Length: 296
Image 1 (tube, rainbow, N blue to C red):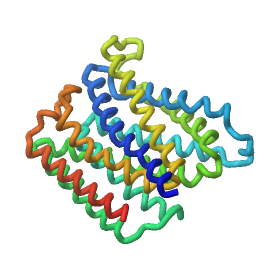
Image 2: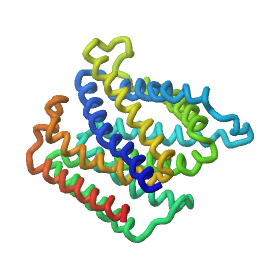
Image 3: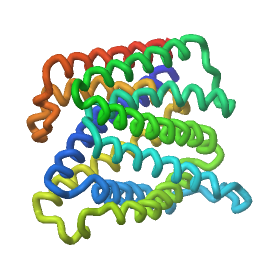
Image 4: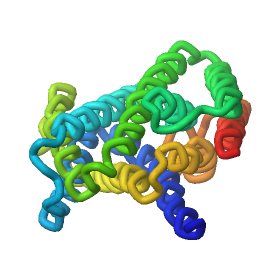
């Protein structure tokens, strides 16, 4: 059982790395003029189509008397979290957005306690304090662009809140439904809600050129795989907190990858002052310490 649990946690670890690559790809697509919102729209429909075939193999155990509003609520929270993420990415840097979203692990612990899905030991509250300090460090590390980073931090925290509550509700409701019956209607709802992105499109989808489609297609696929992988991990592991402890390593990955391969994506963050990147790396390190306390 222990070995199975550890192997299952390799999936959110892979998603943590995949998320950072996806975020950099989204930023590159946006720089070419594709826009974050068109990428999000295509990504949501990609993951909806990915889960749709599961309905054919679903068990008949789920009765119509069950609460069909539950996938709708999680779809709404997922959509809200994604919208806040896109707003944050459109205002600020990946190496700020991703570490701030690492606070999701603390929020998952808090929501688990409030919804009686788990308990919150004292170590997790210390972790919350470390996460707060990390956010302040990321804020100071922005130099003259501080107001913009402040807005980015707020939007990223709102995203973490929506995603965190959604993860806990998935853990709470998924065993009663089963993955084959819960995820298809949930992501179908996310796809329908994504039509709300259309007013933010710079131009219709058909107006994108070949270069835009290459980056948008890659970003949409990576985001779809990441989103599907995280929620599927919760079903496999059975603990939203454990999954998010591992997944929060994306905060560290974001700083390291931007520093190391940001030029592959022509990311402007690659050329930030060394002192700014070091401050962000330290902030990410504090969040990793917070994650360690939660793990203990």
